[in-house]
Amino acid sequence: MVVTAATIFALNGTVSKLLLQGGFDAPQLTTFRATGAFVGLLLLSLVTGPRRLAVRRRELPLLITFGLAGFFLVPTLYFVAISRLPVGIGLLFEFTAPAFVALWVRFGEREQVRRRLWVGLVLCLAGLVAVAQIWTGRLSLDPVGIAAGMASAVLLAGYYVLGAKSVSNRDPLSVTCWAFGVSAVAGAIVRPWWNFPGHLLAGRSDGVPMWLLAIYLLIFGTILPYLLISASMRHLPPTSVGIIGMTELVLASVFAWFLLDEVLSVTQIVGGLVLLAGVILAETARTPRRDAPVVPELPTG
Image 1 (spheres, one colour):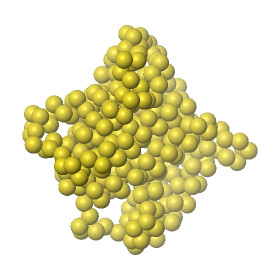
Image 2: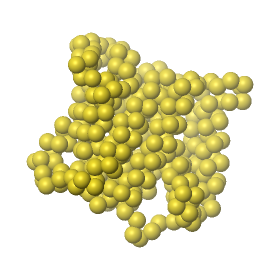
Image 3: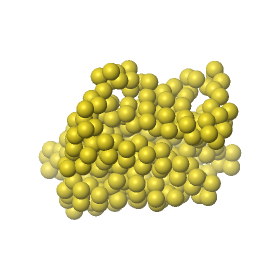
């Protein structure tokens, strides 16, 4: 389930970039995706158990924060990143989120962590230096793209922390449904629907119909992989899901290579592998607690 989700998510990186190249901007694409996902998940919730959608007043501040941070700002910044960077590298920056979570656990919550956390963080920094090729005297990548990618990682880490601490008493389907709803409302404020460039869906991007790309974004790039990841967590612990899900990064780079001609240098590939190794070490450095709630993984891509 995780590998299948990672595969269709990986292709979604290329699909999203084609939609951006076809004329959408990052907030518009985020709003379109969030609205479609909210409608789809709302219908699914109504069919499978409408009671799960009930929301208490005290839950509203958290759900709003959850939706704004994890479901509006994270994908918007990710779309900004891949519009300026190769898809694989944009995703790579976002994948550093578990390292920020581990740092929060150690210094914010003052919990004990395994020593390999520090090795993992060093590898993350070394990998980022190699990917950006800083030793050349200037960044080989777009600075705005880098900033957007790292900001999305920090916000994604905040999503994980919020989810583990505050939304664990709700089922993942209802949480994600309402979070996408909040994202859709936020997007409609930033990019009102009456200004939505619907004519773009009649066009093509790199020879592919825009409407077909949009359908993939909603169904295969959002709803289906989310359901697969949620179902997989009945069989695997969250850490395993996160590590196996990193196959998305490799597959996204391969898809972008074949479909967008985004070729990474040997140094960047090696740096990406080093960074991934560091993230895995950091993600597994946390000392598990029996009473720790399960956090639904947030689909990227």
